[in-house]
Image (cartoon, rainbow, N blue to C red; front, side):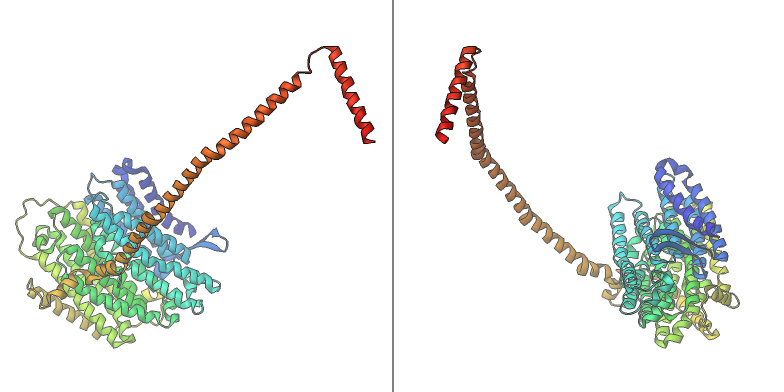
Length: 615
C-alpha cells in the first residue's frame, strides 16, 4: 500500500526534475514523457483513493514525514491528476513546437507533484514543503516567457502576494510547537491546542489559505497570473494552486470550529469574495480576466462551505469547478492561438468559427453559470444548504453571488456566439487539442448525479462527514430558475452599458482597486524605507567607511614617516655597535702564543687584585 502513495508523489516530482535537468535536449520527448507520467499518476491516485494508504519516513527527531490518503485527499488527488492529464493532452497538441517544451512540461509535472504532496500531507511541516514548491513553480510557470518584462513582473506580483500570506502557515506551525501539546503539528491535531495558541494557529491557517485561494483582500494576484500560458492558467486556476487554500480550510474544519470565530470569518469572507469578484467578472472585457475573476468567486463558494461545515458541498463544488474552469481556460487558449484574440469584442463569432470548440466552451460556461442540469448547479446548492442552516443572510449573499455567476458566464457565451466576423488569418485548432475539451465538457455533465442521492450520500460516507446539510427540492428549483432568468436577461441585454456610475465600473474593472491599494499601503512605504536606507547607506555609512579609510591611510603614512625612521635608526645603531664590538674582539686574536700568554697573565693579575680588594 505504501508503495502506491510514495509513487504517487515521487513519479511526477522526479520526472519533472529530470526534464528540467536535461533541458532543451529533451524537448522532443518531453510531451510524451509528461503524458505517460500524468496517466500513471492518475492510475495511482485512483488506487490510493480506494485503498487509503499512509506512509511514514524519518526526517527530524520526533518530526517524521507523514503522508496519508483519506476520503477528502483521495478525491482531490484524483481530481488533480485527471485535470493535469487533460491539460497536458491539450498542451502536447497545442503548445508551440519551438518553445522550451522540456522546461514547460517539467515545471507542470513538478507543480502537479507539489500539489499532490500538499493534498496528502498529514503534518504541517510536510504541507509547508509542498506549499513552498507549489508557489515557486507557479512563479516560474506564470513567468514562463521570461524575456517579456510584463510577464515577469506579473509573476513577481503573484509570487510576492501569495508569499506574504504564506507567512501565516509559519506562524501557525510556530504556535503549534509553542503550545507544547503532542500531535499539534498534525493537521488533525491542530484543534487540540489551547488558547492563545489556538487562535494564532487559526489566524495563520486562514491567512495562508486566503492568499493561496485569492480570496479578499488578496484576489488581485490572480489577475496578474493571466500573463502565463493558457495551459498554466487552466491547471493553476482549476484543480491545483488556487484550490489549495480551500482544501486546507475544508481539511481543518475542526480547527475553525474549535476557535469559536474562525468558521464565521471564513464563511463571510467566502461569501463576500463570491459576490464582489462576481461583480468584477461582470465588468471585465477580456475573456481570461473574466475567467480569473470568476475563479476567485467560485472558490469563494468553497471557502463558504468550509466555514459552514458543508464539506460535501465544498468538495463537490471543487471537483465540478475543476472540470468547468479547466475547459474554459483551455478553450480561451485555443482561441488565443488560433485567432490571436482574447478580448471579448475580438472573439465575436469564435464559437461559430470552431464549432466543436464552441460547443465545449458553451457547456463549460453554462455549467459555471449554475444552469440545470449541469454539475455546478447541483453542487452549489449542496453547499448553499449549509449557508442556509447557518444564517439566512449568508444564504442570501451566496444566492446573489450565484446569480452573478449566470450573468458573467452568459456574457462570455453571448460574445462568442454572435455572428462571425471574417477571419482570413485564423488557423485551424489541432484535433489533438479538441479531444481533451470534449472530455472535460462531458465531465461537466457526468458529475451532476454525484450531487444527488444516493451518490451524494456515498460521497458523504467517503468524506466521513456526518450531519451534512441536505438541500430541499425547492432550493434546487429556486437556484435553477433564478440562474435561467439571469442568463436570459443577460443574453437579451447584450452589449448595452450597465446603468452604473463610471467610477463604480472602473473600480470593478480594475479588480476593486486592491492592487492599487496594496501599492499605496504596502509597496510605496516599503520602497520609501528602502530609499531612505539607501540614502543612509550612501550618505552616512559610505562616508563613514571612506573617512575611516582616509584616517587609516594617514596613520599609515605617519607610521611610515616617523616610527619607521626611528625603528630603522635603532636597528642601524645596534648593527653599528655590534660591528664595533666585533672589530674590538678581533684585535686580540693575533695567532701569536706569547701574546695570548701575556693576555692571560694580565687577566689573572686583574682577577687577583679584585679578589684582594673584595676581601
